[in-house]
Length: 165
Image 1 (spheres, rainbow, N blue to C red):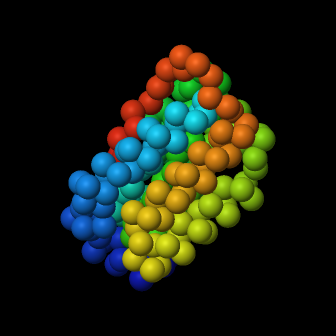
Image 2: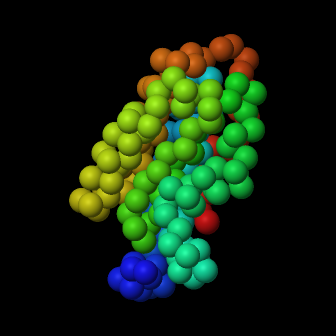
């Protein structure tokens, strides 16, 4: 059990998310997702969570395990072409995880997602949260545009608004 991690999570609340991502930042992220999705046939969701609840934290839940839960909860898997991507930020750990549906993950693999996550986390260490998320969205969008080019009349299958958990 990591006592320092537990204390860090207990000290983070939704106010921390509001400080790091004020409404104008959430608007910018939403706009970036919408603009990026015009270039490809994929669906991107961004979710940020201040901290884990006590029970999962005591059980040692990782950011990756939580991201998979959020991927399911937000139904990112529920796209026509299995090309949904979740960018998940666990703020207390400053840990980014990208979970991609099987259609896109099979084409790119874990290394691609990990590289994007590390770049985002580097921006976060410098206090550049909005810029880090925007860069991550654009990087994911470039890969989706390559593997899932935009088709005319494609529907927007998921909300573009960031999710604050």
